[in-house]
Image (cartoon, rainbow, N blue to C red; front, side, top):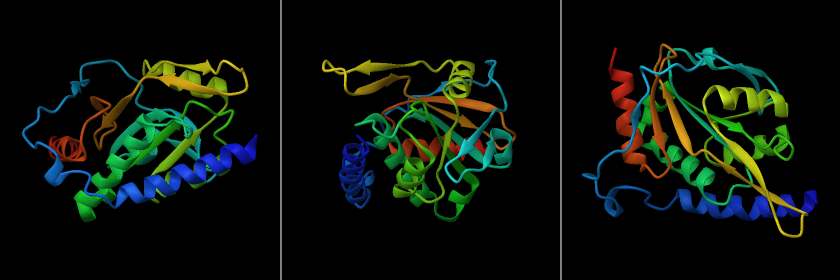
Length: 204
């Protein structure tokens, strides 16, 4: 089973790495396209939680105060939404240049059964070495996801030997004081994400 997952992961990683060198934004996108994001500053969400990062260290949301944090829930076997979002943030980091050090991407695995620490340690750096993958027990992950109103469930294949995950596809953007500012749905361009991050960073 692991060899199948590993070979699939390696093939997908090669494709994704190739995609990172393609022009993801600029000439192929309409810069005037409306940015889709929801103001969450008046909503009640937790300002902290604790999981384990892909290096095996304890990680809390509050550890990243002073930075804009982009929090995303997903899984490494995801065929589209998750790698696309991470690829967009790779472009965001390149667009920000030195300012990228003021942004932290956190990827919470909703599939801790398959997403081991080792697999996350291989998967996240394929997009950017500064991204962090977070995991925990099934109960811990469910608790954090529920707190952010993120839903997910297994979708089993007909043969019953494999499954995928159906999940909420949102990026949560926090400001440097740890306040949730925006909820951004899947499909936003790197340009749009960069603009939102700069606005959050520059707004008191």
